[in-house]
Length: 156
Image (cartoon, rainbow, N blue to C red; front, side, top):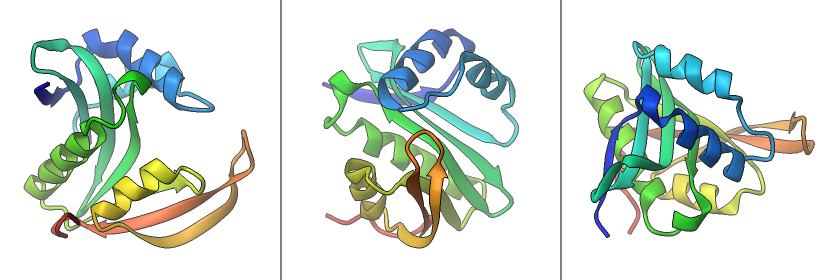
């Protein structure tokens, strides 16, 4: 299957809310997604889709440009399509956009027990730079703060 990445658009709202609900213990609200879809200036908001059905969002990545840093806010792929490289494709596209914007680093926070996400982020050169114990109020789980270089090479 051929995949593609494109900018998120308001018509993606229903799919974004669905994917978020399938992916997160405490999902973001529809109102949050509406707000991010309107705030385009400092955001990188991308959708992954099948090349055959580009209007059907299967995953998304959302990040904020902060001067020379890209802060990844959210990354999710619908469960039925996980393990097919969509998360990696979204990360690659966000890294490319960050480089074009002059960012040298990217940062994120991730649940300590989210092994799949940790493996993906580490493959992009992210390293743990801090911890926030009890950060996630829904589970009391620790957040790992991770930092990486936009220019770092992918691990094979």
